[in-house]
Image (cartoon, rainbow, N blue to C red):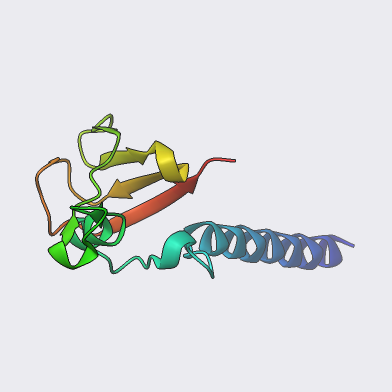
Length: 112
């Protein structure tokens, strides 16, 4: 009986560890389809370029103005949070600096 209990306990603990690992892996994995064609390899400069608008609305050939965030902050001192209210998206960058154009995307939060 004691050997059976130890074996079942071991199997149960291994299953719990495997389940916890699978959930952690799923939580840290990138979503399959990020909004607006974004990838986690995009930099802040490319996000601002893609979310921009024409400089002159009647002359689209005049170029694009960068799509600056509506607001931003660095609440955890390690990431910069750029809030784009017009898209209902918050993009969290891997740099605390609001001027670092080479910062990559750490996470994307879509408001619903």
